[in-house]
Structures are given as structure tokens and as C-alpha cells.
Image (tube, rainbow, N blue to C red; front, side, top):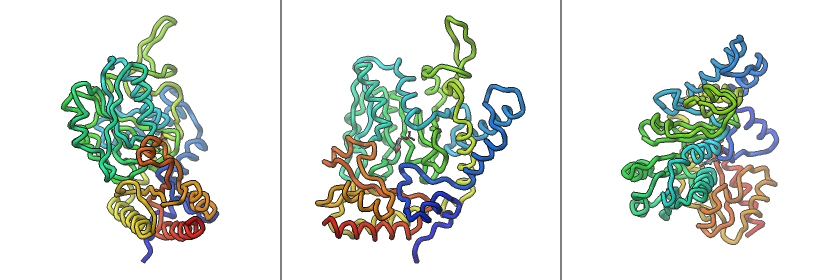
Length: 401
Ligand SMILES: Cc1ncc(COP(=O)(O)O)c(C=O)c1O
């Protein structure tokens, strides 16, 4: 029996792409959107747009209520204890930059920031650049052969100079859950702040930031079936209080004259200017939609689809998987075949997968590669999508090998 997603019809984008002959297998880059989200986006604009947190008039009050309702839904999705601990940024990338600038004044020359070898550029470059500005040491935790951060080496590398640990929950290249609990414990034992990149992890299953116990958790709406232009930054109260304000402008202040100003606390103090109002409201609709699904059934479907993908890859000669993926995606190269040539032939056959360094250039370099192909799955993908990918892969390899 081919695997069928009961939720596929809820996503007009996946149906439109299919009608065009495209098989979308790039959800780790960005996900297709449910109809409920499109309705919310249109509903906000068609019903009368208004700015938030400013106007006393009816449209302004209505927009503010809908915007703050989304904050509540997002806080609930992550099990944050309080909506005030959830900041909307313009992307996950912006959230990491906010952290790097907002925490900068706490670092002194010689302090250490610890990341891992698998971080996305968004969770590497802000820290690397902070280290360069402040003469800090950027420590990189190596991986074991299964693609997991090596805990033995982590225990040696996280030490008294460690001021901050920033690691991914789920790698966008290797597709395996990282051992966050022991890693965070190592950092916390040194009194370091902890940052979790949940951008990929948050999409699969439900995650509880309180149970995780990190100081900051970052993720992105557009991978979570929401609109682009919105990032989410959760912070523990005491951690948020350590952040200096970093972008200045409308609505983030308490009082100003020409000489100086005082600023609001989180979240509004970190949401300077007009926020992405429509997108935040529409994210709320995506979360409502996801909440309406049977989470267990989604999980079973995703795991079954992933198993089919892995089996197929493992059966093909010359295919080398990167790491040991256990959810959502698989990255691979084929012996004797350049990934760009393979990507070209897959594209010609209407297979939308990602090729290249996946915004993790140092990780790919560590594998001795300039790039790889990544197939990534959404809850709307069917077994037929995976089969179409393998048919195209076989045809491409027949030409190339
Ligand atoms: C693991 C990970 N972190 C961070 C990001 C950055 O997210 P955004 O592009 O939404 O800012 C991505 C996006 O691919 C990612 O996969």
C-alpha cells in the first residue's frame, strides 16, 4: 500500500506544484502552507489592515488583538510559561543576530562561545563575528561518525571559560536529533547561557522549552507551515533581562527626548518598528491548523515516509548518506557523480530537492564535500512523491554513472 497523506489536500501549494509536474521535496528549506493560513492572510488584508500597539481605533484594536493572540498560540505551541517570553523577529536568522548583539556586553576577551560542527550559518556567523569583535574564542564541538555531537569531547571542551553554548536540536543536513539534555547540562554546570536552534526541530513533533531547560530557543515560522518574514525567540525571564536593546525605533521605547531614551522590556522592546503583522496573524492560523491534526498520526506518517526514503537510498549502489538521519530528511552524494550534475537531471525531471552546501559550508567541508543533495519531507508528502524521486534518481544515475 503506498503511503498517502490525509492532509495533502489542505495545502493548495503542493497540489498546484503537482499539477505543474513538480514533486516538492524541499520542506526543510521552506514548507508549503495550509489553506487556513492563506485565508487568515487574505482575511487580515481584506478586512482592513491596521498597525498594532499604536492606534485606539477599531481596526487597530482588532489587529493588535489578533497579533497578540498569535503570540499566545506560539507560546502555547512551545509551552513557554508566559507570552511575554516570546519575541517575534523577522526570521530565525534575525533572532540569532539579536542574541549576539544583545548579549555582547557580557563577554570579555578570552571568554569562550561553544557551538557545534553542524550548525547552520545562522547559528555560526553571528557568534563568529561576535568573537572577532570581542576577541573571544569560538569553540567548535566535533561530531561522532553517526552525526551526533560527540559528548565525550564536549565534556572536555565545555569549561570554566565557556560563557555560552549554541547548538541545533535537529541538523538541517544530517537529520538527527542532537543530545541536547547532556549538552545543556554541561554548559549549565559552568554557568553558561544556552541557546537552542530549534528551526528544524520544531517542525517535527512537539517540543517543550520548559522541559528542555534552555535559556533561549529560536525557530522560524516559514518552516512550520507558516508565512515567511517571522522568526520566534523564546527566552527564560532572567535570560531576557540580560539582553541589551539592539534595534531602535517606534514602539520599543517608554520615553525619549532628543538626548536619551528608556526602553520597554521584552517582548515589545525587541520588536522595533512595524512588525510583520499579517504574517504573525497568519502564523497563528497555521498553528491552529497544526493543533487540529492528530499529532500521533502525523508522527507515524512522517516516520514511515522517512523510512521509505532511507530504504530506497540505501538500496542504491554508490549512494553515501551523510550521518545517520532519523527524521525528516536525508542528504547524500553518489560516488563518481557530481552533486550539481545530479541536481540538474533531477530538476529536469520535476524533482524539487536541494543541492549544495545547505548553509552549513564548514560541515560539508568536514565531509570532504563541496555539496550534497538533500531530500526533505513535509506532512503533505505521499509515498508517490518518494517513488517519483527514486524513478528520477535511477534515470539520472543511468546517464551519469
Ligand atoms: C537549522 C537552521 N537554523 C537556522 C535557519 C535559518 O532560518 P531562517 O532562514 O528562517 O532565518 C535554518 C534555515 O534553513 C535552519 O535550517
